[in-house]
Length: 547
Image 1 (tube, one colour):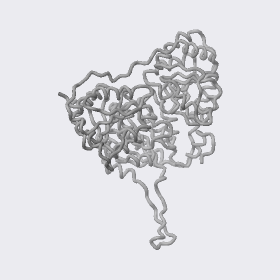
Image 2 (tube, one colour):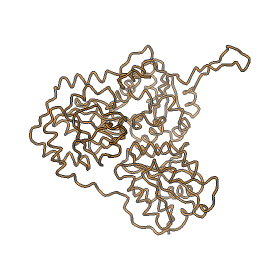
Image 3 (cartoon, helix red, strand yellow):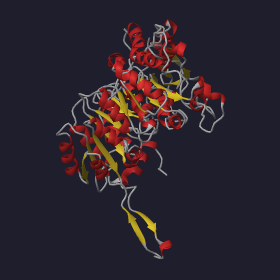
Image 4 (cartoon, one colour):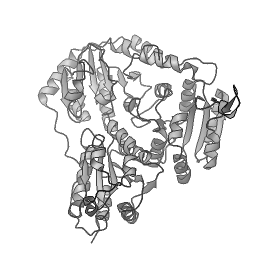
């Protein structure tokens, strides 16, 4: 008879989990790992729990089925919080398995006991505790909850004295029920708004998935309607398409154009993607969404934050556009000045090309995109470099530019690149990270080297962590100081067996990119960028002097 661990792993496989990540310890972890080995579910050892959770979240985002991560109890759970919060904010489906003290031990009060469910309550969709009699149902329920809209992480709490017990397998469906058909009345109202708009603009968000893109492209071209995407939705329309207007930052960069719209069509736009500021547009918003707008989020303190939809259609996004098509068969009123749209598109693409004396961040982004083949995947860390990277990394479809929601999880890019390369072993993956972001997950360079992943890691090194003056007055050297050299990223990479180069100008950066791609080995390029233009970049995006 199978054990609870066997049933948990079998349930993960039925839910479509391609592999799982983690930092295991004793207790239930080892029995789950052995069950995974026997059943052929790959396990990837990471160095940090929160990095493992990011790997699992990105896997879920790319696969469309839950990713999975596991950790030990107590400190392992607390160390996972950042990665789980990332998954919650990015609506990434994942199952997080944590070890737990045996049920018999909970009657005692010890300094090592931690209420996992209470600790994680605000950052997971729910906690599901496994028992001997419920293993098959619990893992299926966790998968259903992770995939239910809005998607997100679910905590599976596994007591250490349960996993080795024999249990009876029970048939359980890990897939949530399909969404209901969009309401006819809502579709009719949406069609009326679209038919009456002369200058409609579409803003696609993280709810837009690969299966929706063929419908979205046909919709935008038929109206026609220009499209902006949030960071998470890049590639919803190929970035080089004439109607692709770039990233909707939520700041001032796109405001002159969007203010011309007389209808804003939100397509899978999630309020969690928006900067918490007053919605600056007067045009009505038609909200096409997988789940109803969060009434609590709409009622932000002070009122007027985010948008309040004039009409809303809830359902599968592709199905919504399919249902709208016959209702829009008659000629629509859309009448954009095509020349003006093209001019604004070109001007916006050039807006972040801020000239600097040294190696410019936007040139690093442009040269990297130019050197890599179509279909290459970029993972992008939080930081000032994300603005030029997302502007100039041209994506053909969703999933080719992976970034943490908004200005969120620093240290995201390297774990995300590991997950992306494992999920797409036949595609080139480049990790675009800042110096601070890499230092937060530097131990995962060993993971890259151990797995022999052919990643290209580009570090936007603005030397901010270097040349710090340390006064030596306490040593009797009044007025004297020493220079702190800061991280030596090439030396760090080489210590793990990863090839590395330093680039200080465009020519050396091009040469490093060429050499990094010459063999199927991991490589790191320390791009010594000139950060003097970052302040101007932030002013362009935010519309006000950066502080």
